[in-house]
Length: 201
Image 1 (cartoon, rainbow, N blue to C red):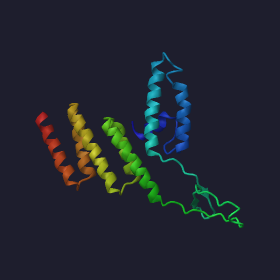
Image 2: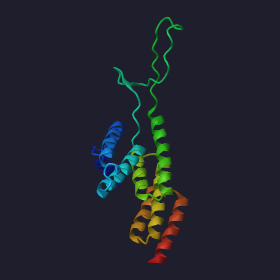
Image 3: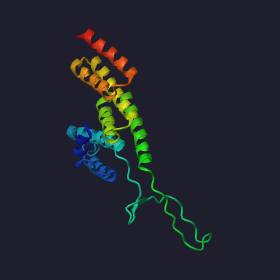
Image 4: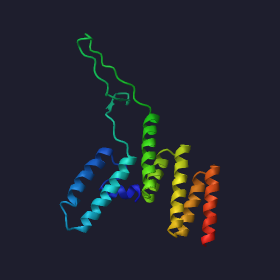
């Protein structure tokens, strides 16, 4: 399931906000919940697919922070306690500086990495690939993300070899090399995977 499918399942357009994703999921989850549709297998399958899509989107779409747009189009974050009037006779509102975009991206990156690790450990390879590709699209110049993407391709390639899906395995192993071509360790490991493929062929 790719991100586009996730949005479609939840009845949303690509790029919908975090709040829209949660609202749509809650509405649809109530409609298709197995407790309400006990004898309806289609409803149960729909509920499972909705939940998978929701989890995947939550891992990729950052929650909106509380922001205030000023005349300069800057954003102010209001999570600091106000100074009590007793200690400050003149009421002075201080506006905290907006966080750097880099800090938001960094938090998103590591949250996504943790989710990626879980998907790989649970052998949910299509979800892992969709997740890391979405992160790579958002952070195209990040070498760590590129490395994670290449490793995810390689791990899935190996799994496909074990499932005897050899042509598909070859495609993902090649994608691993193309994604991170200067990673010598990855290159030597993928070469071993190709040798294993040749022996099976």
